[in-house]
Structure formats: structure tokens, C-alpha cells
Length: 387
Image 1 (cartoon, helix red, strand yellow):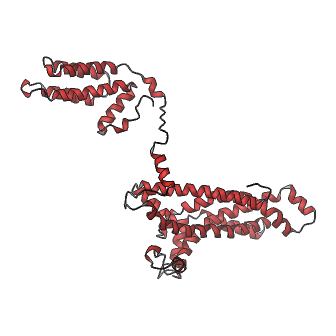
Image 2 (cartoon, helix red, strand yellow; image 1 turned 120 degrees about the vertical axis):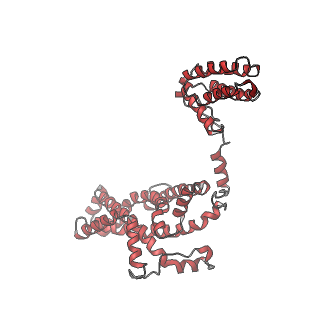
Image 3 (cartoon, helix red, strand yellow; image 1 turned 180 degrees about the vertical axis):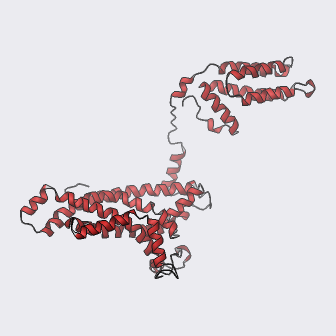
């Protein structure tokens, strides 16, 4: 509110800041509140020059304490009378008492209307965000509060790990989902469509962490399942002493289960969306026209229905791309996978703001990239759409 100064956060200790905040909420008159605070400090300074031999110093100290704990205006008059009686005849505190009296009177002139007026401050580009974004664009992402390392050094390897799994997830999701969704639409209400829908709905309602845990037990746990993959632990590339391709080829078995776990829910979502999109396209007039011209059913689907049905799917790509990339925390935690999801969780728990902000900026950039790729795909699917 406009009743508060923009520098209130700089007042220390916090107890003093809270006291001034309370008074400002009551009066809406920050100049009077500030003057009252300054008069209390001046009275405290003047109190130090009062000799102990006068026998009133403790009483004045108690009066000062009362001013610091009082939270309502009527009680100020009682405290002020106590100060006047205790300081009567002591010249060294008379000036401070007079200032305190004037500040209490000024505090009674409330301006509560300012509590309902919003405050606007404009500092141009001289603010924390613009300073941070300028350094970010120039490649200076700061240092981790927790490890003291450069943020880029903290994120470059987790970024590589997440890119591998998520690019594979997106690729297999679209490659698997689009043909299945197309076939479901072509065989609407037939056995293939009905059984596939049932399987898809079952997979959709099973949480990904349960699917991942079942896959780990079945394929990567010795003495319980098949143990085909030799465990789920991935050797970090930075300590492998191998080239990237060598490391990737030897780590493929450990990528399989995370990719499957993340691909299944995405496939279900895209598959059902593709089915609905194709069925909606088949109800259009140009499809009936194509059939009336004698085109074969395969040509109707491939040349007319399929391309136009891709428009909603391409729109989904803009959201799936960053969503899959940043939404893999559960899977990464389950498979002890050192990707960006785990790094974001640890940065959040340790309040490592530079690392957290950099990851969120990466997510924002991925959203922009996803939208750009979608726009390019629109022009590929339908040449009449201008880039």
C-alpha cells in the first residue's frame, strides 16, 4: 500500500520493523510513524546521560520499554504521562520528552485512506531481475549457493542426461501413438478399437511411479524378476573416462526402463487425442467429397484425413515438449537418474536459488522452442499455412 515506504525491508532488527509495520497499519501515516520511531531512539540516547544517583533511571527505562511494546494509540497517552512524571526536573531528558510528546500527537492524525491505495515504483532496468537476466543472456548463470560451483557446471551434465531420456520419450511417443490412434479411428467401435481403448485407459490411470517400480522389479532386480538389464544405476558420463558415444552405447540398457515409464502415459494421451482428431476430421465435408469421387479408403485417410488430423496433435507438441522434459522428477527419483528433475528438487529443498532460476529459465526456453517447432510443423502439414 502507498502508506508504506519501499525501504521498510531495510529496517533492523526485525522486531523494530514489525513494530513500525503495525503502527503504519493502524495510522496509514508513515511520516508520523517514522518521527515516533526517531523520538524513541533519541529518548533512549538521552537516557544514557541520566546519572544512576537520581533514582529514576530504571523508571525511565521501563517507560521506554512500554513505548516499544505498546500496540494501540490510547495506551500511548498513559505511557507518555509516566515518562513526564519520571523525567520531571531532569534537564537532560526534557528535550527528548518534548519530541516524544509531539511525535505521539502527530501519530494521532491518521491517514488510513493510503492503506487502500496501491503503491507503484519504477526503477527502470536497475533491479534484480534485469541484472540477473542480463548476466544470464551473456552466459553468466551465477554460482550455486550450496556447492559454490558455477551454475552451468552444475547443470550441463544433468541437462545431457535429461535430453537423452526425454528426446527418446518424445520420439517413441509420437511414433507409437500416431499410427495406433489412426487405426483406432479407422476401426471405430470394432474389436481392435474397443480392446485398445481399454488397455489405454488402464495404462492412463496407473501412476507412472507404480509402472516404473513394476518394471524395476521385473527386469532389473536380482533374485526377483528376470534381471535382464543388470540394474538401473547409470555410470555418470563425467567420471566414465570414455567418449560420449561409447558411454551412451554401454548405458543403453539403463535408459530403457525410464524411457518406457515416461513414454507410456504420453502414448496414451496422444493416442486417444489422435483417435478423436481423426474421427472429427472424417466428419468434414471434404472427406465426404473425396469419397464420392471414388478415392480408395487408404487414399482418403492418408492424403486428407491424416494430415488435417495432425493439427491438434502438433498443437499438443508445444506443451508436451517442455512438459515431458521438466515433468520427469518422479521417474528420475525412482530410477536414481541424475537429470534436471532431481537437480531441481535438490535446489528447491536447499533454497539454491541460482540453480533453481536457471532450470526454470530452461523450461521457459523449451516452451518457446516447442511453439516455434509447432509453427514450422503447421507449414509442413498444410502448405496453405504461412510461416
